[in-house]
Image 1: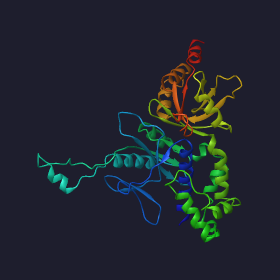
Image 2: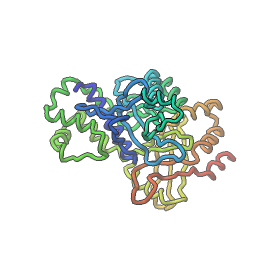
Image 3: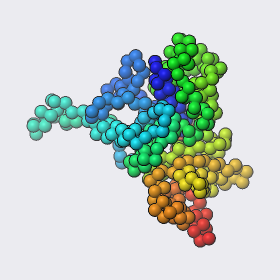
Image 4: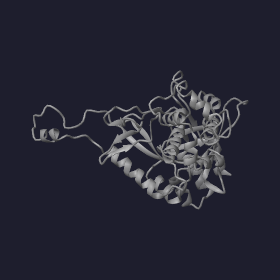
Length: 359
């Protein structure tokens, strides 16, 4: 195990944990199309040109009817620099390679010459539509953002929701730190971070590791901060198919989202920061007068920001943008197997939007 592998595994662990906490499920290998490499714990997914390392491969809580079921694969980049356009272009190529893959054998090709053949010349397997996202420790360059938006590639940076000094700790993981970890703990650590098969881990196996991390000032400190932050994170879906990654500074996000879930009288409004038009805040208040207001910050998909920019960030154009694209937001926060749907539907306050237009 190298320091690069350890940093990458740690980033994968945080992204996978975020998705699990929002109701997504880990994809299990089928041993053929998706397989696990012996001895490494790495997952691979077959494409037209090659088999690709699947860093974080998840299934969403719900599927859309009348189409192939979808899956989300995050490419994780633990670089200590801004993520550039080349990385996002590679993600687009990966999406094409995976989604266009089909298993066709020599025998099946020959059978096409026989109009009375008994079998179809296609593989008998369940097919999926794969979306590819890119997750990183650092921010993304403007060209990378624009390319991702135009090709509907979700982006997620740890700096959007973890403290800056915590993100800096990733880059302090060096060879001296690695060799300071006892050999038995080091092996458990890598296994723990790369464990993709279960949605929850048996902590009894990892007791020596967890005891060690309690006092560790690098990876232990990162994971302790992450544990305090994870329940402030939810995932939103617009009707356009764009994903939103929403973060709150409040600790009671789960309780509030559960309350909003059973009410059709929630008051939801969206505000933007004049100094940063790509950073918006979704503010929600429940029908109960005693309910706290929940504020969730998110980065607006850059393709929508570009539409607004055509009007020079005009206020009325901003109101129209909110009404047209954000009138309904599906927010996934965790599984609700006992209550049915695993999401909360948030409707934007249309009366508030109309009043803004008329002022």
